[in-house]
Length: 286
Image (cartoon, rainbow, N blue to C red; front, side, top):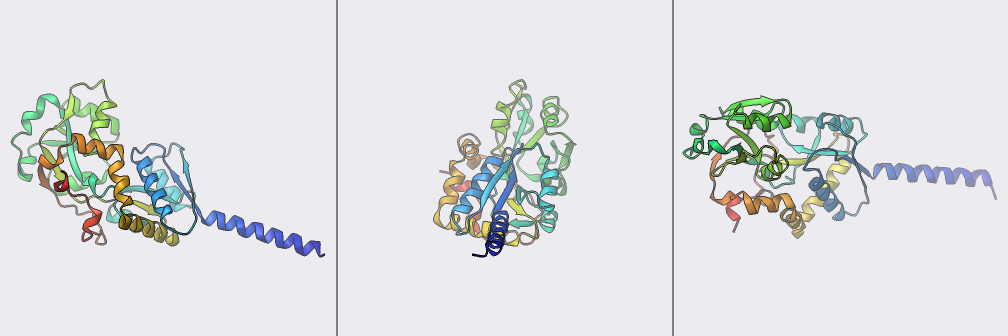
């Protein structure tokens, strides 16, 4: 027996196995984003619907969103999730399946409880221009609100926005419909804050998975897996079973709110607006 050839063959086999394992790795970071657990569930769902085997690794390093995107670019992470816009889609490959079925584009307000009367007679976009709205300085929604002529007060830090609306620095803190109830529960010291009763802003706001431009195979696999999950109904099962979504259905009263529709000029032309099955319609709520 030629032991040198055997050893070389074993080494090559080990190297090939290692390379294959590396190709099949999906590393993501779930350090602070409250949408992270849901996005991870959707990745797991997609992987169940494809033949190729991937290993999903969820890391917890305290990364900012900017850092996470940098790590995807340099290959230390394989995917991230975020609200989409044309700029982001030019730098990364989006999987154009809105994970929250566009729910993030339905926005309601956190306000000071003494200010509800300011909102009672707002019925149109022009009426809405009479109030000030708080947002994060770098958030995609900030550009959308400003492009529609609304008055926006910006802050660098998320936590500052709760203190600012409580202190009267602006009238309303715009939140995705699945966000404010849990957020208020997490700020029990701000007892004068509440959810505004009547209004809802509506615009298309897809929340996608993204991978690097070079990782075309992973992008295609995730897209195929999510489309298969949509086709067999399991995507909607995960969506409607999510605690945050169930909270919306129970508390937000979306069906009875006055909807004010806004344009979203930050959307890319490739946004799948024509695929009705991808977008949640509040009118379908029983």
